[in-house]
Length: 159
Image 1 (cartoon, one colour):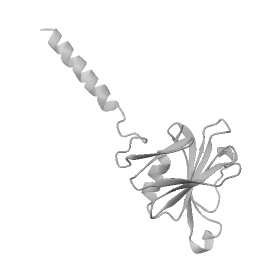
Image 2: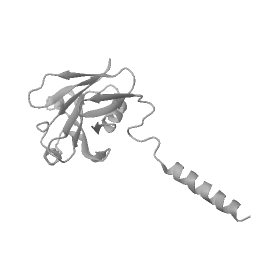
Image 3: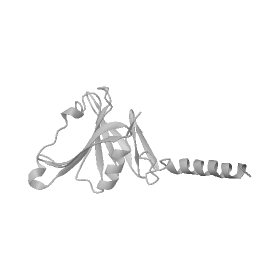
Image 4: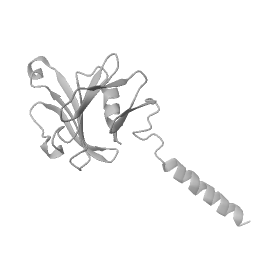
């Protein structure tokens, strides 16, 4: 008779632990079935998004895009210098220090210098793995689908 309550307790504990797992983590978004592996980093994106490398000199640059939005990236040790150099300014709409998949990051939404007069917005994420090599900045001007862009930003993983 004592085995049954212990078995039920064990089963309940296993179900509890299973319920605590993060089945919808930032990198397992069921709405974004496509993983774009871009050299030394990857992001998840909805179907229809692609990426293309552009010509860079000191950093790895390119674009992640669909038919409405284009996210630019600049990856490498000369990308932006480090998170300590990313500062709030009067142009900021929002400035959010955070972590993305364990990597310190800043998500910034600001008016571009030219946009202060015409309303142009730049949405950026700065990621710094702390080794002075894996620095990545992704940014977009006037995103049509800001929530999707932010979700793509938050899926970033250094390879």
